[in-house]
Length: 304
Image 1 (cartoon, helix red, strand yellow):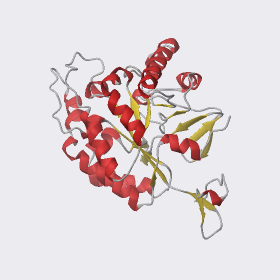
Image 2: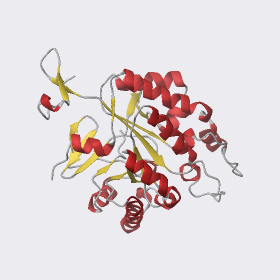
Image 3: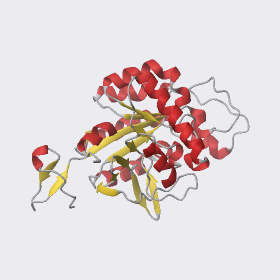
Image 4: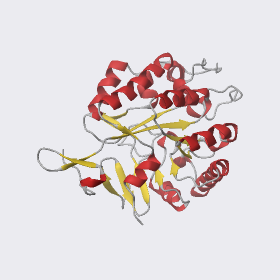
């Protein structure tokens, strides 16, 4: 495996192997889309939004703290105020706080002006809470393509983490990233801006995500195998989860819920804490170093 040598090995990012080439350090980024259960699975339904499963955020933070792991957290703007004190504390502890739109709406469903409004409102709200600029963005449900990404760049963000390998689901967008260069595997850069690709692993003709509902709902022996297969490549590993995945609370009842939606909101929740801990253990065993996206921006600056 030969990867581009970007810097001298004195930087500590690379090490010599037995044929004299260089391999970069292996980095893992734990990310969470900080949204409530209704954002994820019932964005348009008339449900009781007074019931919250955001306590899953606190579960994740407690687990990560025990291993001194800092992560990147993408916050839906409309719930930022209720989490204001926690977000400030997370920021001071070294976590990377980023933006996930003001409402949980996919950019591909909005006009450019609508999306810009969503983006600016969310950015200003989170920055007002933290007292400093925020640099990161992720599109709800990864629903973004190249035109909205241009708007993300124009609004002063320094990175996005919405890119997936091609997916069959219509809800995901397609980022072709014309004009970007894949500086190292899964890290795409252009002047002043970086796109961090979310980890997927090939199975047949499908690029399966290695986080979120996939790692919660599918059999653990299978997800463990697919995750290890990915880690064997040494590529940067980007895991994403949601508060609902880790919350110990029961899923609120929703009238008229479809069988498919019921499965998506219930399967595997009782085992997800164990799985989350197991993934962290796998990453450590495979020699991965935990960083935030903000820290990766310093390691791999995009230039100007």
